[in-house]
Image (cartoon, rainbow, N blue to C red; front, side, top):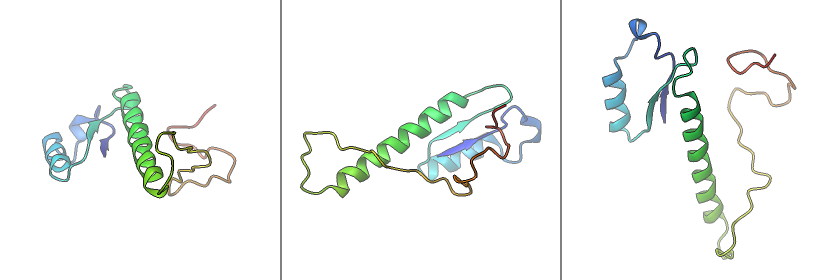
Length: 101
């Protein structure tokens, strides 16, 4: 996935959108531009990301369960997704765009 943020700052763009789209197509990536400031494509980007995570985990669950009863859905209970650079033990939010008040 190639999700570009701050599309509202077009005049400061370092990479033309056409170049980014061509690159994404060349390496077979989903491409989307977003703007948190203008709330452009934010929900769509997260929904696409979550759908791709779900598909990936579902495939890995099926592959990791040889001989399982494929007529029944596999449980994903206990599956954790660890985001590099995130400290889950900190107990709080250190700021950024996702800070709650």
